[in-house]
Image 1 (cartoon, one colour):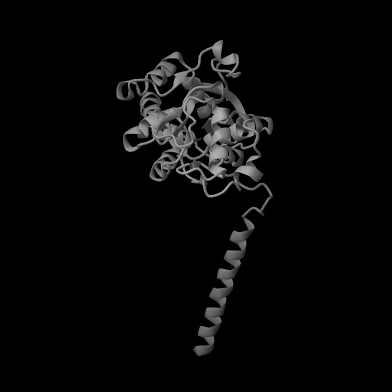
Image 2 (cartoon, rainbow, N blue to C red):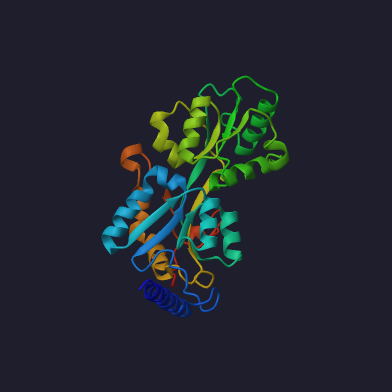
Length: 318
């Protein structure tokens, strides 16, 4: 009996092994007609990588509320720095980017990962700092202000500090442009400038809070500053100059690079953003709460001319 039982057990194990082997035969070898990756979004989901400044102002929540109510589409925003957002687009992790760094945007497009760019709106960066203005930069041009901040900081002028986003965001990229225009190499002269220069590695709202705690200067988009102003002692010190223009654009991820993206959903959303009705809503956003709009919508032909140099009206297709 014991021998028969052993034979029976061995037979069952053999049968199970045969079934397992056959099941494995039905699979596809890695890299050989493999099942495509799941879409970044999907038919009823649109994933959008965007900037912390748009989130901090509350505009994203308003766009989401209205668009989802009109279309039933599930908008899923991922708020991070513009550089990180564009990297998400390069990987195909999202269907669309909504960002504000023209040089990074153009590289994204030139490399074949972004299509159908449409500029939406703009506001301005401002240099904010302590009301006492220890560096004495009030009413200077932005470039003069950055040059003076460097001189004051490296000379260890009392009370002078600068907090940078330090996160490859659109704001951080604009800050680097201003340092370059002021005559400094960012990597060799600014990053090693001393303890007065602090990298936050945070979004705009958190950077403003940190700068406020340290009573330091920082570069901020005006919209986020106004949204946080009731929590800050910092005041706008330099708020004029074409160098401070801050343009926002929507760019779809190229389905030829990432076939799984929701290209149709991205095109529909971009077309909605560029309608006159949506632009009016963007242009009125913040007026009731702050006494002025946080963003200025872009219309043709103004958008095609300096300093904007972009397309803001023509419909796009998937």
